[in-house]
Every structure is written in structure tokens, then in C-alpha cells.
Image 1 (tube, rainbow, N blue to C red):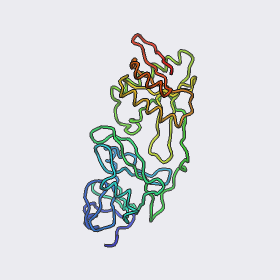
Image 2: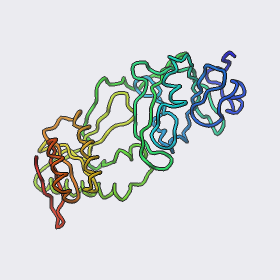
Image 3: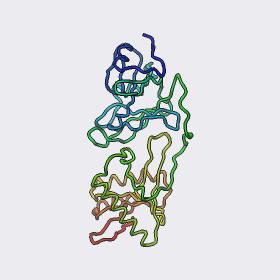
Image 4: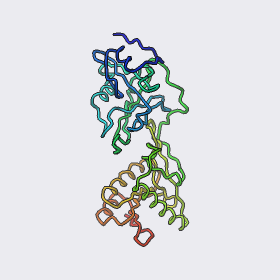
Amino acid sequence: MAWNIQIGEVVVRRQLHQRVGGGSGQGGITRPAKRADVLLFSSPAGARYGYDFDGWKPDGAFHYTGEGQVGDQTFVRGNAAVRDHLDRGLRLRFFDQVKRSVVRYLGEFRVDPELPWYAEEARDRLGDLRKVIVFRLLPVDFKAPEAGEASPGKPRVRDVPMEAHVAETFQMEPKREPTTAERREADLVDRYVAALVAEGGATTRKEIKLPDLGRALYTDLFDKGRAELVEAKSSAARHHVRLALGQLLDYARYVDHRSRAVLLPSYPGPDLVELLHRVDVACIYEQEGGGFVRLDP
């Protein structure tokens, strides 16, 4: 059966599936039986499930989040079909939503063979943070919209104000209210910044933009006097310390620095201090009566 839907054509989704010979009327990725076409659908409602990376990016690709609304997304079913479509001789047909149950055909796409996909973090429909797959799709039968700027070939790092203390989850979900733990973490950073400033220090935050990824990363704090990367957590429990350590090691690849530190609301215990010191990371914690203690490696 030949493909007979024109680029820009608007069609009721139920009628679309009748015309192409099947496929699920729901969900973002579906394949009609006995066809070599995979249908992809994008909708603004997908942002509720972490599908807010979708759209044209400066790299000239359409970034499209894979299927799976709960838990980590994996390469099964539709996600596998998209990733492997070139090897399997399948064609990707892309549609965006015009209004409820009505879609517009944008054209045929293919995954970029050089960087077909990357992993991002987003919350699922249960509110849990998980890994999502974001495909980089290139147009086949039409020209991509003009990009506002060329895609950078390397990460870009710049200072941003401390007042813009926005957790990475807020960048993904700007309408979400901060949790109690997130507010405690922000307050801890504010108190530590005040202590540094009182001693004549200066602070900023670092924004890290990676090439071809959907969003920026933000450090909690950068102590200018020490040229120190600082990652804060709302608890001194092992899980939080390990998470802070992983984030520090991630950011340290991109930000020029002389030292690294984890900022905690209380003393984490000698074992966790040793863990930090083994990878040359200082431990800074707040005393019960006020003030901060620094344990250098």
C-alpha cells in the first residue's frame, strides 16, 4: 500500500489509521500491520509525563522522547523500532497534534546515524524521576526550519546569578512547586553563601549547556575565592552524599575548578567523610548552633 498522505495534511487520527491499514489509535509510537511505516505522534499533553524535550533544536534535528510513561524507558517495542528503523527498512512518519484527536503530517524522518539518541531525566506519570530516551530525528523529504543558532561543538559554561537557584527538576517542570527537601537544600545554600559573603567571599552558579542535549545543567554553588565546585544536599544520609558526589564528578568534567566540596546540613559520619576524601572532595557541614565546619581531604 503506497503512502498517500501529503506533508501538511490534517486528518482525524481515527481516520488516519483507517487509511494506513491499522496501528494503535493511542500512544506516541505505533506501526500499522503489514506496512514498513512507523507512526510517531507528538502532543503538548505529553509534558505531563516528561515528554517536554520534544521539538526542533539548534542542531537541526527534531528531538523526540520515546514511549513509556512509568519507570525507565528501554529499547523495546516502539523505541526499538525507531532506533533500528534504518537496519529494518522501516520509515518514520511523524505527526503533531492540531487539536484533540486531530493530527498533522509533518513528513518522513530518520534517526541521525552519528547520534541517534541520548538519555535524559524526567518524571513519569507517578511523579518519580526516571531515564527517558530522546531520539534525534532528521527530515528526509523536506527542509528543517532555520535554526536560531548553530549547534555548538563543545559544552558551554557560563555564570548565572545565585538568585536563579533553580533545581534541575524545576528546569524540566517549571510549574511544579518545590518539595520540602528542595526548599531545605535551597535554604542551606543561602546560609552558606551568606557566611562566605560575610568573610569577603563571592559566589555564583555555573550553567552547563551540552551540545545536542535538551536542557542545561546547573551547579548549586561555585565559590569564586577557592574556585570550588559545591554540591548541596538536604540530608547527610548516605544516599544523598553519594548522589552529591556523582553530580560533582559530572560537573567537574566541564567547569574549571581547583577544588570540590559537598555541603550538608549536619555531620555525615566518619565513613562518608572518608568516602569524599578518597576522591579529593571536601565535606562542609552546618553545626547545630550555627556556622559551618569544613573538613578538607
